[in-house]
Length: 211
Image (cartoon, rainbow, N blue to C red; front, side):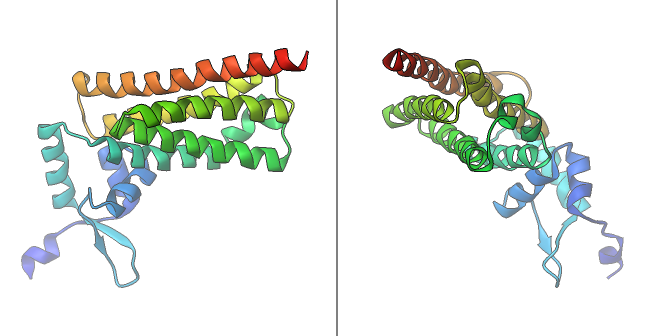
């Protein structure tokens, strides 16, 4: 019992501070079983400091992070960015009514899901999804009265939010700069570049058809 009394229990925010990651990342990793987690009688998450320190040291030694786990963490961070008002501060977003805003929030999550498939599978179907997403961004922008520049800014907001979240995830997992980072960034840019190019091509085609 004496040893049990010396155990230090941490809350979710304490773990986020120790690991240097966003609290939403801690929550997602806990739900997926990546982090050692305990539940109180009231179903609150609690963490043993000794277990978190052991996990942290082990992670530093292995430097491994599965793409699917990284994307799950990134999804949570992007949702937090949307919730904390970053999206509302965008000039292109201010031009939209609420139904249009809801559509753009949905398309942002679709971008993330498509990228998750591409990171894990990377086959012809996911490449086709990139083209489909580009068409969707372009056609939606024209439907809601956004010009090509605003359409591009809308896409870049979600792309850059996702990129920032992935970098935070890799950094939080103590993956050192090198091959793992290079593969992740190359895949992300490859997929999102396909979307952006098709967005611009589609917008141009739709404008030419109207003139």
